[in-house]
Image (cartoon, rainbow, N blue to C red):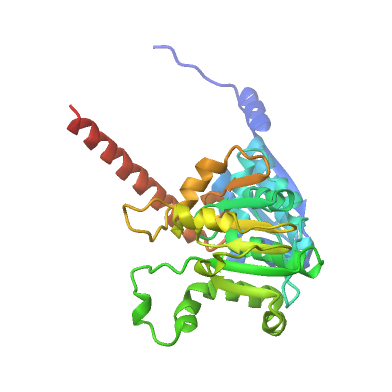
Length: 348
C-alpha cells in the first residue's frame, strides 16, 4: 500500500490559493436595507455561494473560496448600489441578483434600475426589475404592437399601463383604451347582481387598480369623464377605429381567434397596442383555440410586431409565486409527456 502525505508547506500554499477574505465597507444607513430582517439576505448569499459573511462595525468580511467570495461580493455590491439609489431591497432583488451571477450578469441589475418609466401618484418609481421586463419595455417603445406573454406576476399588465400613462402625459397619444375579454371563469355573468356594467366591472378591476396606483383616482376619474381614458370589455371594440390611442388588451389568452383578429384590425394611425396574456391560465372551453396562440403563430414574421416571452425568472411578486409557477410548469410538462406516450401506444 502506498500512502501519500502532503507537506505542511504544500498544504498551506493550496489553502492560500483557494481560500480568500474580502473586505467590504457599507455605509451604516444602508446596512439594514441590504442585510434584511435578522440578516436574512446575508444568509441567502452565504447559502448560495458557500461563504461566510462576518460584520464588524460596518465592515463586512466575506470568507471562502476565492471565486465564490468574488461572486458573493459582486452580488453584495450590486445590492448596496441599489440601496444607494433609494430602492427598498426585497427578497426578489436578492434572488434575482444571485441567479444572474451564474451567468456573470449581476451588474445588469444596475443597468435595468436606471430605466424609470414613470412615477406613481405617491412618487414611487415604476421601472423594470428583470432583464426580461427590460426587453419587454424596450419592445413596447420600439414596436407599434407588442405581445407580452408570460406567467402571473411578471408585470406584463402593470408595465404596459405605466408606459400608456406616461405616453398620455407626454402627449404622444390622446387617449388610453384598456380592454379585456369578460369571459366566465367558472362563474356565470347572468347570476351576478346589477346591470351590465356592474356585472363586467369585476373582470376589469385589475386595470382599475393599476390606474389608481399610477395615476391616482382623481386624475383617472377626471380623464374618464372626458372620455380620454376608457376601460371596457373587448366586445365593445367591434366596429371601432382607434386612432391616436394607447390600447392594452389584457388576458388575451381568453380571446378567440376571431376576437383577436377583430381587435388587431381596430388599431389606427398614431396608435400603439400592447397585448398581454398567460398561456397557462385559459378559461376558454377545452375545444376552443386561443386567439393569443393563433396570433403568435400568424404574426411572428412581421417586423413591426414584438413578441416578448417572460418566464418564471421575471416574476416580481413574493418568491413563493415563482416556485408555484415553476412547480406548475414541471407538472404540465410531465402531463403532456404522459399524454404523448399514451397516444404513441394507442397508434401501435
